[in-house]
Length: 359
Ligand SMILES: Cc1cc2nc3c(=O)[nH]c(=O)nc-3n(C[C@H](O)[C@H](O)[C@H](O)COP(=O)(O)OP(=O)(O)OC[C@H]3O[C@@H](n4cnc5c(N)ncnc54)[C@H](O)[C@@H]3O)c2cc1C
Image 1: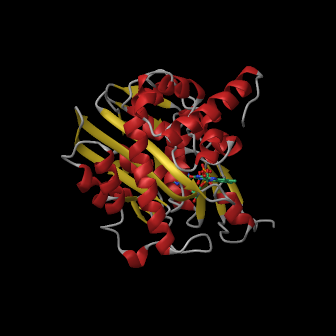
Image 2: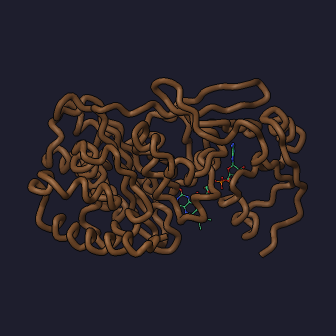
Image 3: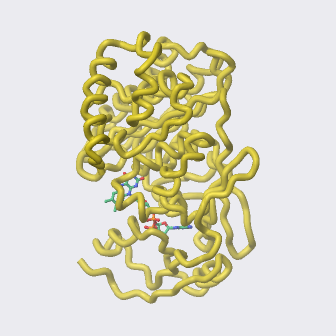
């Protein structure tokens, strides 16, 4: 289908984008266009005008400042996922960015567009909630910062005003005592998250001192899982705590508001939520706390190897795989995991040595 006719404006600064939005009340910002254009082509949206912010200086790129990183709104997922330093400083966000769509989507879709669009099945909202991010917006009254816990307000609804531009997201750095991870059950048709769970845990030795666990795809917007968080805080991060947190993941959610569609009933989504919460926490337990993946970048090979596994998804790329399974950590893992890893080592090693890119 073709979209209805619209005017096109190219903004050259954040201020001009804000003015163009004020002058054109039915205008929409366009960033990567990967959500907006399909909705326009299918007739679900027909803005009178588009305000293109792709040429605005200063909206893209990543800036590090002491203990946090500022991600410009126009920064693509690929820029985040391909940035080694990001894997050190904000693993849960880097890992999630690498899980979005396919390479084409990651090369085009933007961090600002993803969270501003607030699709309930998008991947980044859960990661940003787990990461305790702050969203920066610029509107007619100037700049303001919105805590991520206040940002997502409903399906495609955020705390940013109609005439405000999301300019960036600030993510506090993870330190050596932080464990984090993201897992998702992708929709078989679209790759969006049927359920995705992000976790970031602060640890004192083995004890969880602070837990931020959040999900996409379950409610009408990205949501903290306070049941899982409460089950973890003050506990030793062991298999029992992980199981208890998985069981409690849906406790504080309004069961009448759980998403239900052609892909999954609400009941099935809650089951997935429990399982994927456990998997996200297992991932923090086996990989991020191992200290063996510090120099490893989770990359494209990882996306491929996690699919056939199904039961365990703690290993996400070739160097990490070797690092994690090459030594003593292997001893502590269930036989199903080591069997799976052996198969994957063999197949990814051959893919890497023959220069085959899984993407
Ligand atoms: C085939 C395919 C697969 C996909 N798979 C996934 C997936 O697995 N996971 C996932 O999370 N997403 C997925 N997406 C969606 C993709 O991530 C989009 O890029 C994202 O949802 C929107 O970002 P964008 O930059 O493309 O925004 P656009 O499409 O340009 O804009 C989306 C909306 O956000 C508004 N907007 C954009 N930028 C700003 C800003 N800076 N300030 C305020 N408002 C703004 C626009 O006005 C518009 O209403 C997929 C998309 C496609 C086409």
